[in-house]
Amino acid sequence: MNTWAPAMNPSSHRQHGPNAHRGSHSPPSPQPRVVDHDATSGERSYAMFTHLAPIAASVLSVGIPGLSIIAPLVMWQVRKNDSPFLDDHGREAVNFQITILLFSIASLITLGLMYVPILIFSIVVSIIGAVAANKGEFYRYPCCLRLISG
Image (cartoon, rainbow, N blue to C red; front, side, top):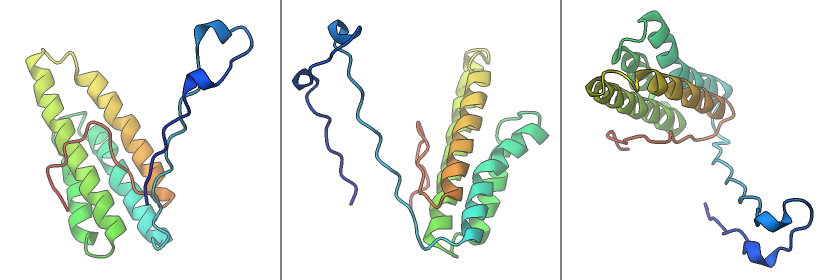
């Protein structure tokens, strides 16, 4: 069950020290990701490479938009029926790469000014997804259009 409990009212905490007058409080801690305890080591590794493959494709294709979709799409199609864990990670990686392609095309309208930040963002969150997959956790990319549903 995935529940979220709101943080305590910050006014109920009396703060002491140099920042007491600023009214600062610590944000609520993030919820832990859901873990698939049935995912094997091989499935976790495969899911991890599904997230990392687009980075390799971007490097090998010198950042040509669209080519980074191919590797996770093929990897997902090959193993999606093997486990719900692989199906979920593959679908999420493909959806994110489609989203990045659409953002990249939109950046061309702005003379490519947003292409490099989009590329950096996609690399960072793909690495985060790979780490989560390797831990057996389910992962959701931020700013992702989920065009392929499960």
